[in-house]
Image: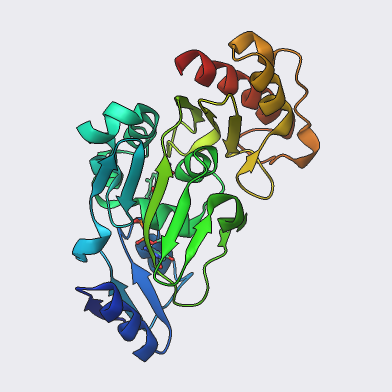
Amino acid sequence: MYETNYHRASSVQEAVQMMGAAAEGKYLSGGMTIIPTMRQRLAAPSDLIDLRHIAEMKGIAVDGRSVRIGAATTHEEVATSAALAAVCPALCGLAGHIGDPAVRHMGTIGGSIANNDPAADYPAAMLGLDAVIVTDRREIMAGDFFTGLFETALEEGEIITAVRFETPAKAAYRKFPNPASRYAMTGVFVARRDNGDVRVAVTGAGSNGVFRHSGLEAALSANWSPDAVANVTVDASDLLADLHASAAYRANLVKVMTKRAVAAA
Ligand SMILES: Cc1cc2nc3c(=O)[nH]c(=O)nc-3n(C[C@H](O)[C@H](O)[C@H](O)COP(=O)(O)OP(=O)(O)OC[C@H]3O[C@@H](n4cnc5c(N)ncnc54)[C@H](O)[C@@H]3O)c2cc1C
C-alpha cells in the first residue's frame, strides 16, 4: 500500500501551484493510462492533480477554419462535435474509434498526447494537421513535440492546455486496430492543404513513435490519388516488430492505410 493525495484544480494556475507543492506529483486527466499504471505499481505519485474540472481546458471552438480544442476535452466530445465535423470530420472519426465507450468518455486529447503512446491515434492527427500544442508556458509545433516512445517536449510540471490547428482542404485517418485494445497496429493520417502540400503521419509502426513519411508525401503531392502510393517504398528497417506484427507487415500496413485514407479523404 502507498498513499496518494488527490487534488482537484479549478484553474491552470492552481494546478501549477499544486504541482509545485507536491513531492512527486502527476497530473490526472481521464485517468485511462495513469490509473492502470499506478495499479500495476509502475508509478507511485505522492499527489494526483486533477485537470478535468478546469473550465478553460475544456471544449471545442471553431472559427472559420481555425480550431481550438481544450486539453481536457474527452474523445467522445471530439467524436460527436457538430462544429468540428463541419470543418474536420477526420478528427471526429479518429476520436470515435479510440478504445471503447468507457475509454472515450473518460480519456482526453491532452492526456493522450502528453502520454505519446507509440500506438495512440491523436499523435498522428496532430502531426498530420501541423497542430500547435499550447501549454501553460509556450506553444510547441507538433513536429517538435513528439520526441520518442512515450517522450514529449514537455518540461517538468508543464501542462498542455489546448491544441489548435487550421483545417486542411482534405483529411482522413485510417487505422488497422489491434483487435483486443483497438490501439493502432498501424494508423495513417493524411492531410492536403489548399496549396497542394500533403502530410502523411504514421502511428503504431515507428520504432521511435509517430513519424511523417516523406516518400508518401512526395507521391501524393504529385498525384493526390490512392494509386500514387503503389510505387512508394516503405522501409521496414525502422519499424516496430512485436508479437502483434512484424516490421514487414507494418510496412505493408502503412501503404494500405495510406491508400484507404486518401480514398476516404
Ligand atoms: C482499454 C483501452 C483502450 C485504449 N485504446 C486506445 C486507442 O485505440 N487509441 C488511442 O489513441 N488510445 C487508446 N487508449 C488510451 C486512451 O486514449 C487514454 O485516454 C490516453 O492514453 C490517456 O488519456 P487520459 O486523459 O486518460 O490521461 P491520463 O491517464 O489521466 O494521463 C496520462 C499521462 O498524461 C499526463 N497528462 C494528462 N493530461 C495532461 C495535460 N493536460 N498536460 C500534461 N500532462 C498531462 C498524466 O500525468 C499522465 O502521465 C486506450 C486506453 C485503454 C485503457
